[in-house]
Length: 269
Ligand SMILES: [Zn+2]
Image (cartoon, rainbow, N blue to C red; front, side, top):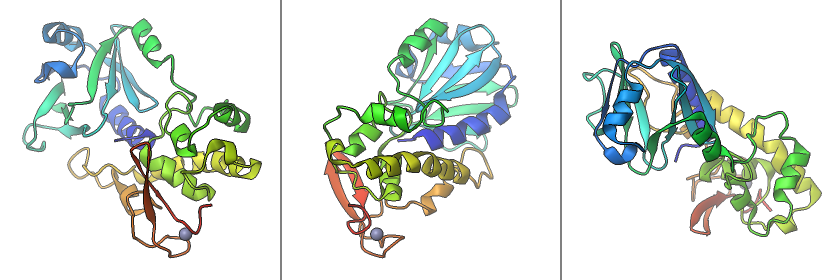
């Protein structure tokens, strides 16, 4: 599932292509991908201009000049492609937004969705989300506050969207590795140094992943060589039995509350 770096990568590409552009046509092929009757959805977006595109947690928000917002969550299996009917992947497109000669295709949007919301609805939807990792107000003290009273494994706090927004299965493991902390470790058993190391790892791990284009496999447009660049730099995630990049020992895989988890048994205590 795409996480903060993947959605941030998408956002930057989408802003470049579509900020300030008018939606000249739209198509919904899967009713359940939107939250209102298809005719209402089409009436609301056709002719509207995208004034900006923002990211909040793992969501992207397309702000329209009508005051409405399109809130996207790709969930598992969802992705986007920018192009034309001719060069787009031969896959079912659940929603298509047309901007003149260029189309934005939403593919694999089965668990994911593109919801048309008012500002109030958007705010209510995001009300429970925790702080953004790059928000200057998210400092060590704010991180400590999120850990306070938590009983489970540290990984479960890192992936909890109410505790910190945008981190999921992959980057929680990458952050734990960078901090030298086992993702299975109970929050209550983390000493002060481990807590500081975890906090200190969050922004560098996410920054590096954004710089490299995240880990999504599929190119976002023809000739896109950036998206998915982090795939070749993963520290521990999805690397079971492969050698640790720091010490060479094989990476182990465990499950925490049915989430797959990867770590180096030697480097992470
Ligand atoms: Zn190691």
